[in-house]
Length: 421
Image (cartoon, rainbow, N blue to C red):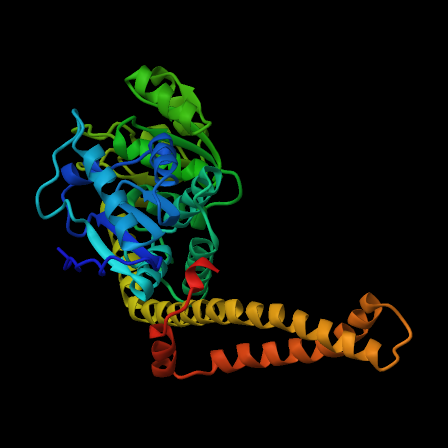
């Protein structure tokens, strides 16, 4: 279990905060207590919008984690956490233990680093999982619809998504397939021509995963058969395939380009006689084996698939160090962006003050014989000064990007109203 950091001293300054629980340290029963579907997230965010001092809020809830990203004062964070823990204690939900109820607490750059790691897949139960990015985008959409999404969380997730794109483009963190269903789909795609006719025999969890992967990757034309019609039809329908009667098994095998057998039969159910002289790609996921493969046929058994799976996992694990380096660059980008936000508030104040100066200069021009109205004199001064102001503002931004990290940290410690700008 990660260490729980004591919250900051209550004050009025809003801060980026993460409250979270995930599979790396919390058992499934406790994650269930804090599970939020889309409707529950909307309800919680609606309540959060009414908390004084809470500027922004977003809920990311998956099967492996529930995380609350907030931009809020310490008092608002405490109020939000109390609501979350109260909801988790409602009847019908697993009780939270004493060590879980505080949740993980992180602030500022630690939140940025965590968000980048999650998006990049190095903090996922399945290393390199790319589906988490879609879930994060859905969370953004929900927060936006609830009116609790603001510039800080938008900027944070934009930085996380850019880091994830960099990690997947430059490393092997998402290369290869790591689930059996994904491995089977990749093996078929790499060993057959376009749009093969695929016969899937089986209707259990493995068969369902294979069918889902084939459908999501748009690989071939799927036909499903099994002794249990109800389960087989359900799998075929979900994967946009065709259900075939069990009695037509021999005919379907004879017409298939790929035969995938994923049953728990104690003996082979597909004989070499069903294949005749044809040599389709055979994929046998069963233990014991379900296919009596003739000599010389292309047949992948479970050991071959596990080897492919292990190879993908090794490639992903080898990429973790490179991904973490990319994450640090993402955190640097976040740090620069936040500093720029602080500068922007001061630049806006400068530009506001300049407007008064322009009016005074314009009035002086009129006193000295300017032939025109005060408004025309102000426009003349603005045309002359605006390019200079923009140039100086750009120089300040460039200067901020070049600041050493230690100087940036020193600047961030200075009081600024950047979070509310």
